[in-house]
Length: 275
Image 1: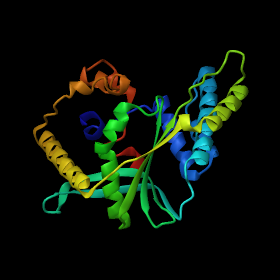
Image 2: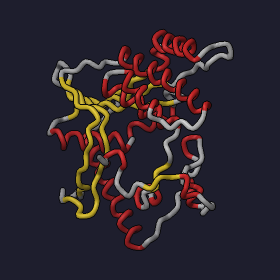
Image 3: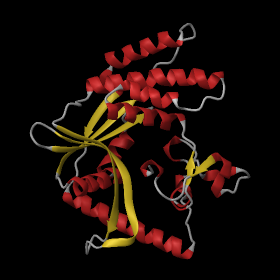
Image 4: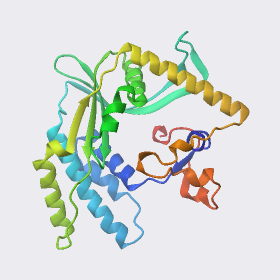
């Protein structure tokens, strides 16, 4: 919280994040070319980077083509990549905070033929569905925040939350294959095994869930205010190795020499909301 949102240190985009960004761009445009264009803009320092990016282009192209074919994408009404910035509100009084705002970007809000409004959240993953993920979704704070923000922004009532997960390739390039041959085999794999690569979970959200989310966010806001006012930022060392990798900000916490050069400094606002 401190390094990312108070000091504005943003970690350099990883390959996994690049794939996620490209996949979202392809779905938003309903066109795999839009996904490929994101990879084309990625920095290339040497031949190894060039070869890796070629593989990534075929990867995101196959993922988007497969997703557009497997998931329902034809809606009566669709609002994609909705940026929002709304005041944090006291859950008891409804009054807005004078200090904090909630900001983010909702993947998609849709309306189906029956007039039902849906919140669609898209994710990419190397492992696909896991027990940990399934067990966590009922209390996922991001889904609750997006649900609440969507209703406020569009003045609608969300009827259904769809959590859509696209899995990254399970096959690798063979030594005897060209990149083009691998790309063709990859696309074929996504189209022949869509149930392996694409998942959709319906996540329940009640009014009580949203109220709990508002209370939780208000408590976090008060904690943040306390930390800023007293310049005290407790370390959560239990998060140093979450998600199967070491936290990118650990070198900053341990004051490793030159750690600041591992990041770009964007300021305290959420970078994806900056125009």
